[in-house]
Image 1 (spheres, rainbow, N blue to C red):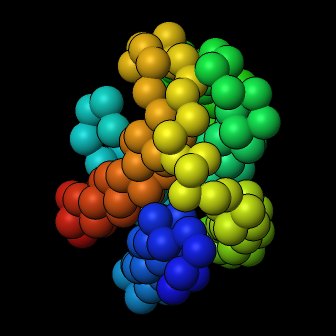
Image 2 (cartoon, one colour):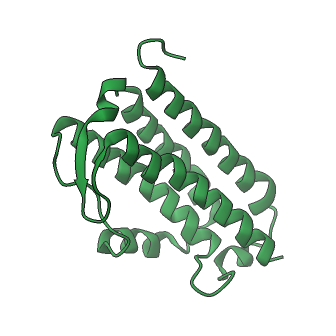
Amino acid sequence: MNATNPRVEAIRQQMHTEFEELLQLIDQHIATRDQQVLYQIPTQDEWTITESLAHIVEFMTYWSNEIAKLVEHPGQNFGRTKEDTNRIRAIEEHSHDALNQMRIALPDSYGYMDDILKHLKDSDLEIPGYHVRFKEQTVGWFIKEFLTDHLENHIVQLREALALLK
Protein backbone atom coordinates (compact mmCIF):
# COMPACT_ATOMS: atom_id res chain seq x y z
CA MET A 1 0.00 0.00 0.00
CA ASN A 2 1.24 3.48 -0.86
CA ALA A 3 2.14 5.24 2.40
CA THR A 4 1.72 8.65 0.75
CA ASN A 5 -1.92 8.11 -0.25
CA PRO A 6 -3.26 5.20 1.80
CA ARG A 7 -6.94 6.04 1.24
CA VAL A 8 -6.54 6.08 -2.54
CA GLU A 9 -4.53 2.86 -2.39
CA ALA A 10 -7.29 1.22 -0.32
CA ILE A 11 -9.83 2.23 -2.99
CA ARG A 12 -7.61 0.84 -5.73
CA GLN A 13 -7.18 -2.41 -3.81
CA GLN A 14 -10.94 -2.70 -3.29
CA MET A 15 -11.56 -2.13 -7.00
CA HIS A 16 -8.88 -4.68 -7.88
CA THR A 17 -10.46 -7.27 -5.58
CA GLU A 18 -13.93 -6.64 -6.99
CA PHE A 19 -12.65 -6.73 -10.56
CA GLU A 20 -10.90 -10.05 -9.95
CA GLU A 21 -14.15 -11.36 -8.47
CA LEU A 22 -15.97 -10.25 -11.62
CA LEU A 23 -13.47 -11.98 -13.90
CA GLN A 24 -13.69 -15.15 -11.84
CA LEU A 25 -17.50 -15.01 -12.04
CA ILE A 26 -17.30 -14.65 -15.81
CA ASP A 27 -14.72 -17.38 -16.31
CA GLN A 28 -16.16 -19.94 -13.90
CA HIS A 29 -19.91 -19.33 -14.01
CA ILE A 30 -20.94 -17.18 -16.96
CA ALA A 31 -18.69 -18.56 -19.70
CA THR A 32 -19.76 -22.10 -18.82
CA ARG A 33 -23.43 -21.39 -19.52
CA ASP A 34 -25.29 -21.81 -22.77
CA GLN A 35 -24.51 -18.50 -24.45
CA GLN A 36 -28.18 -17.85 -25.25
CA VAL A 37 -28.87 -17.55 -21.52
CA LEU A 38 -26.65 -14.47 -21.42
CA TYR A 39 -29.15 -12.55 -23.54
CA GLN A 40 -32.27 -13.55 -21.60
CA ILE A 41 -33.99 -11.22 -19.15
CA PRO A 42 -33.88 -12.89 -15.71
CA THR A 43 -36.89 -11.01 -14.29
CA GLN A 44 -38.99 -8.04 -15.27
CA ASP A 45 -37.11 -4.74 -15.04
CA GLU A 46 -33.72 -6.46 -14.78
CA TRP A 47 -30.89 -6.42 -17.28
CA THR A 48 -29.62 -9.41 -19.16
CA ILE A 49 -26.16 -10.64 -18.22
CA THR A 50 -24.68 -9.04 -21.33
CA GLU A 51 -26.41 -5.72 -20.63
CA SER A 52 -24.89 -5.72 -17.14
CA LEU A 53 -21.43 -6.49 -18.50
CA ALA A 54 -21.76 -3.81 -21.19
CA HIS A 55 -22.70 -1.33 -18.48
CA ILE A 56 -19.71 -2.29 -16.32
CA VAL A 57 -17.34 -1.76 -19.26
CA GLU A 58 -18.92 1.62 -19.92
CA PHE A 59 -19.27 2.96 -16.38
CA MET A 60 -15.69 2.33 -15.26
CA THR A 61 -14.43 4.58 -18.05
CA TYR A 62 -17.23 7.14 -17.78
CA TRP A 63 -16.99 7.67 -14.02
CA SER A 64 -13.20 7.70 -14.11
CA ASN A 65 -13.32 10.52 -16.63
CA GLU A 66 -15.84 12.40 -14.50
CA ILE A 67 -13.64 12.02 -11.41
CA ALA A 68 -10.58 13.26 -13.32
CA LYS A 69 -12.55 16.30 -14.54
CA LEU A 70 -13.78 17.06 -11.03
CA VAL A 71 -10.26 16.90 -9.59
CA GLU A 72 -9.13 19.26 -12.35
CA HIS A 73 -12.10 21.64 -11.81
CA PRO A 74 -13.35 21.40 -8.21
CA GLY A 75 -16.97 22.26 -7.53
CA GLN A 76 -18.20 21.68 -11.07
CA ASN A 77 -21.37 19.85 -12.03
CA PHE A 78 -20.66 16.15 -12.12
CA GLY A 79 -22.00 12.98 -13.66
CA ARG A 80 -25.31 11.96 -15.13
CA THR A 81 -28.54 10.21 -14.23
CA LYS A 82 -29.83 6.77 -15.21
CA GLU A 83 -31.79 8.38 -18.03
CA ASP A 84 -28.66 9.69 -19.78
CA THR A 85 -28.96 8.89 -23.50
CA ASN A 86 -25.25 8.13 -23.94
CA ARG A 87 -25.40 5.65 -21.05
CA ILE A 88 -28.45 3.92 -22.51
CA ARG A 89 -26.96 3.90 -26.01
CA ALA A 90 -23.70 2.32 -24.79
CA ILE A 91 -25.63 -0.49 -23.11
CA GLU A 92 -27.89 -1.03 -26.12
CA GLU A 93 -24.99 -0.99 -28.60
CA HIS A 94 -23.11 -3.69 -26.72
CA SER A 95 -25.92 -5.74 -25.19
CA HIS A 96 -25.60 -8.37 -27.92
CA ASP A 97 -21.80 -8.54 -28.01
CA ALA A 98 -20.27 -11.96 -27.58
CA LEU A 99 -19.04 -12.76 -24.09
CA ASN A 100 -15.44 -13.04 -25.31
CA GLN A 101 -15.66 -9.46 -26.68
CA MET A 102 -16.80 -8.20 -23.30
CA ARG A 103 -14.18 -10.27 -21.51
CA ILE A 104 -11.54 -8.56 -23.67
CA ALA A 105 -13.03 -5.07 -23.12
CA LEU A 106 -13.25 -5.34 -19.34
CA PRO A 107 -9.50 -5.26 -18.55
CA ASP A 108 -9.04 -2.21 -20.79
CA SER A 109 -11.84 -0.38 -19.00
CA TYR A 110 -10.51 -1.42 -15.60
CA GLY A 111 -6.96 -0.43 -16.54
CA TYR A 112 -8.13 2.99 -17.66
CA MET A 113 -9.98 3.49 -14.38
CA ASP A 114 -7.04 2.30 -12.29
CA ASP A 115 -4.68 4.64 -14.14
CA ILE A 116 -6.86 7.60 -13.17
CA LEU A 117 -7.22 6.42 -9.57
CA LYS A 118 -3.48 5.86 -9.10
CA HIS A 119 -2.81 9.51 -9.92
CA LEU A 120 -5.15 10.76 -7.19
CA LYS A 121 -3.90 12.02 -3.85
CA ASP A 122 -5.78 11.41 -0.61
CA SER A 123 -6.50 15.15 -0.46
CA ASP A 124 -8.31 14.86 -3.83
CA LEU A 125 -10.92 12.68 -2.15
CA GLU A 126 -12.18 15.79 -0.31
CA ILE A 127 -12.75 17.86 -3.46
CA PRO A 128 -16.43 18.80 -3.78
CA GLY A 129 -18.60 18.41 -6.84
CA TYR A 130 -22.29 18.78 -7.58
CA HIS A 131 -24.50 15.99 -8.91
CA VAL A 132 -28.06 16.68 -10.05
CA ARG A 133 -29.48 13.87 -7.90
CA PHE A 134 -27.02 13.60 -4.99
CA LYS A 135 -26.26 17.33 -4.72
CA GLU A 136 -22.87 18.36 -3.30
CA GLN A 137 -20.59 15.46 -2.46
CA THR A 138 -16.86 14.79 -2.38
CA VAL A 139 -14.72 12.90 -4.89
CA GLY A 140 -14.35 10.15 -2.28
CA TRP A 141 -18.12 9.85 -1.99
CA PHE A 142 -18.52 9.76 -5.77
CA ILE A 143 -15.86 7.03 -6.08
CA LYS A 144 -17.66 4.92 -3.48
CA GLU A 145 -21.09 5.47 -5.05
CA PHE A 146 -20.19 5.22 -8.73
CA LEU A 147 -17.19 2.89 -8.79
CA THR A 148 -16.66 0.64 -5.76
CA ASP A 149 -20.26 0.14 -4.64
CA HIS A 150 -21.48 0.26 -8.23
CA LEU A 151 -19.24 -2.62 -9.32
CA GLU A 152 -20.06 -4.60 -6.20
CA ASN A 153 -23.80 -4.14 -6.84
CA HIS A 154 -23.49 -5.34 -10.42
CA ILE A 155 -21.57 -8.43 -9.33
CA VAL A 156 -24.46 -9.24 -6.98
CA GLN A 157 -26.91 -8.55 -9.82
CA LEU A 158 -25.01 -10.94 -12.10
CA ARG A 159 -25.00 -13.68 -9.46
CA GLU A 160 -28.75 -13.25 -8.95
CA ALA A 161 -29.37 -13.35 -12.70
CA LEU A 162 -27.35 -16.56 -13.00
CA ALA A 163 -29.38 -18.16 -10.21
CA LEU A 164 -32.65 -17.18 -11.90
CA LEU A 165 -31.55 -18.35 -15.34
CA LYS A 166 -30.62 -21.91 -14.31
